Amino acid sequence: MLFSIIVLLYFLIIQFFANNTKQYSYKGLPYFVLFLSFIILNIFRIYCQTLFPDIPNYKSIFETIQPISFVIKSGYGLEYYDADVEIGFRVLISIYKLFSNNFYFFLFFISLIELSVYYLFCKKYKISIVNAFPIYIGLTYLTFQIGMLRQALAFCFFLFGLIYINRKIVFILFILLGFTFHRSILFCIILFWTDKFVNRKVLYIIFLFSLVLYILKIDIINNFVSFIGIEDTFQAARVGFYMNVDRPNSYLGIGFWERFISFILMNLVYTELSRKNKISKNNNLIYNLGISVILLQMIFFSSPTITSRLRYFIVIFPSIFLSEYIYSECKCRFRWLYQFLFIIYLLMYLNFQATYLI
View 1 (tube, rainbow, N blue to C red):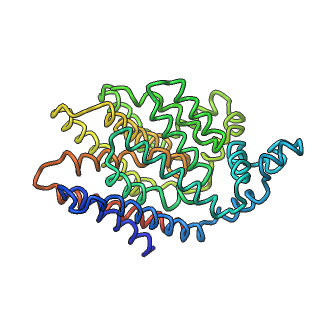
View 2 (cartoon, rainbow, N blue to C red):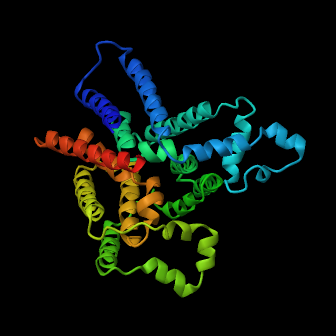
View 3 (cartoon, rainbow, N blue to C red):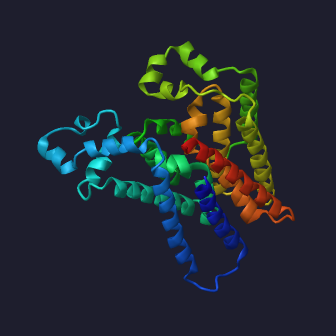
């Protein structure tokens, strides 16, 4: 736990100096910080992966799968080596084994892919890297990026899809490629609209509707699935598997209030940016994704689907939207207070993630 806090504080310190220093006295300093950050992240990753319970299972899968050259020569399909893991992940391991049989370097390779894709996404949407990485560390890195390997790789395809979201066919193709690594990504198809400018009154109505569902405990999803008789299809697509994980719902707990407050704050910020004519295609997409995770968590309140695993695909976006405003756009005298509260939020969230890991 202490190690996790130290790593997050390191990135928060970088964020502070990057946002409050006009120029560097030494031009090579950013490159040194980048290199040091990469080393720290990988030490952190190695430490956490010694604790994460799924890593031994991934090692067993890795050792079972043969290099792609062996597969081709033997005439066996990749399903022969491990039928319970998605084909894309098997192919990745099989191709990797052309070059190395080292499982721990494979974990490093996956981490390198994840960090690179996240960086490219931030560059595409003009998100400050120093603002984006504390969120990445605090909200997803400790469990999602370093432990849920297949789903984290699928997330990379989702980010690539968002980069090309203005071309819907390309967006869908990336989702389908991600599906070969983890089936949960399929729900991301419903986010095809997030590059559009939507009348916020519509979002307010949907939020009020989801709030009523939550307060009255109306399980609209399972009721709808049962009504139209597609329970077997849901189970076959493993949607039912995620929806029926035995995890209690904390009714009106801290998760509910986090979503409720986040929705209000995001819309206050959006209104302020609109007033200043600073809403762009980039921050509008981040806003839409952030609002989506809030609405989906409210609607799926009775199931751990969104609140436990599927939410990881979009959980970072409310914080990215608010962080970009606090550090880049907010000029009021209370800016320091907003930054302090945001830091406390990330530390609290990281504490929850560390508890989950242990």
